Length: 268
Image (cartoon, rainbow, N blue to C red; front, side):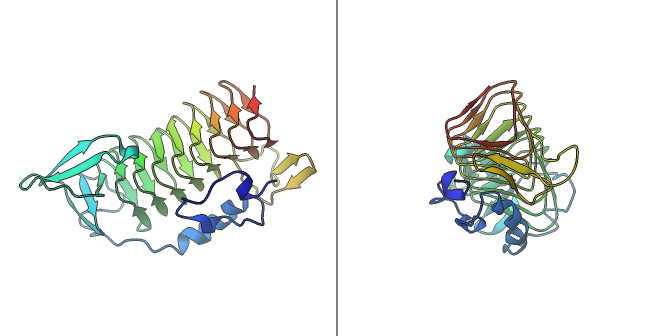
């Protein structure tokens, strides 16, 4: 009931090895650090991509190389639909799959992998390690605090803070959200102001209330897991250890109790 296949379709996800089909779905959070630490990250020119310094000029990543955008025109179409377009000013040739890091963005550490078609907007801050999947948009003011992994076509939105979390394909946290030690399923969407609390006031491991009784997750920090297609309304909050099945809805201005909520549940 609480295994990964009950919550996610991993057939098109680039990192299915994070999930153990025989263990509880939160096991992926236990695997995340070792998985990301063993990932092969690209090596970029430190003179162009300076560590911890706001970029003075926008940069382009294409086919494993990073270079200035001075000789290129950028069309900022819908990133998640592959509409970010980079063309040479002289030949008008499109750099298919080019990613763009805008001026003013800050990247800290060397373990950062930015996939094709990604847009990192100015004013965002990404701490290593981070894996940003294809055609993902990291918006102005986003804060990725380390051990953040996204699939393709995701959104990490304005003033959204993420740490030690996983976004499956097309997962979106567009506005003023906080996610710690959490997983968003495919096509999951967070309304503006959603907060995933990940630490109990009284200390100790987070336990999950299920139909079969209380289950100790073994994790001191555990935010929320939303299955494929689940969504939250604006200004909603989840207690530590909230697990919402596929297609579930957390209504606006609502605090979700910790524990397992069945697929297509409506939490009011």
